[in-house]
Length: 381
Image (cartoon, rainbow, N blue to C red; front, side, top):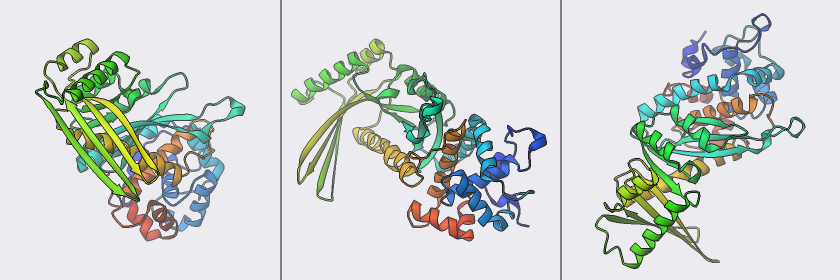
């Protein structure tokens, strides 16, 4: 029999607390969780499909899992994930991703929220699950997630998520919802730097920043000793996108901003202008940011652009490749737990260096035992 340790992440769930009555347990919680991960990697999207994968690959699975009573039914799998403590399951995932970030020297963490629209249940008056996720932009990995409770918002969930992450030495980027003095302080206390989108939810600071840049642009920055500028131009598919970034670190203004508005270690205010030219017309968007970084405008502009990777490379992938938004898994804690399993599956697939799309790799993993084993062997774990 092949040793179980060959599946790198299996040990993370060895002492996972089983929520069921011990006298009624026929299938270990570790077996069920690892089965779920392997099945979702291999294109499963539901409890029925996880059970079907297990039945089809039972002989292969028994090389690595105990499966003393064979493959659990889809009802048993659903019940376990419905009862499983998502905080306990999430802590195992975070333990793994922390090691990945340390070994791969992660640098930027983008944080953003997402609603799983299919998880609502009108008959139970259950709102759709809303999660805040952290994304390592350079590695393309989900680092963690935090549920946003029904009577709360992302401002409450983001600090809880930050507590689980290795922030030291990283740039943390957030949209306007996360632009809060307490969140900025938490990031700095953890040894990270922040780049926060500034909008009208901070009306006085926003007005101050817009007025400051308007005057600076009108006077060609002549009265500012410390400022910087960067520009990128991208062409393709008939489009031309120009991004310009102006950064002001004026020593006279920053102490005033820190004192008047309470932003710890605020080093610069930033203005980004995005212009898009297409055969049918043009558009322009201007956005403002605040940051604790002492870096130049080129670094700030790159961090702002990379932030959107969480939408394009994480949330879009989970919706299109893993069908997350349409998933009707909704009982108990199963929506949150299944989201964690998707995160793990996505992270495993992203770490694979072989060529091919994520969709193609999932399909290949469903068919090819050797490729599936390759995916879950020699991971950072």
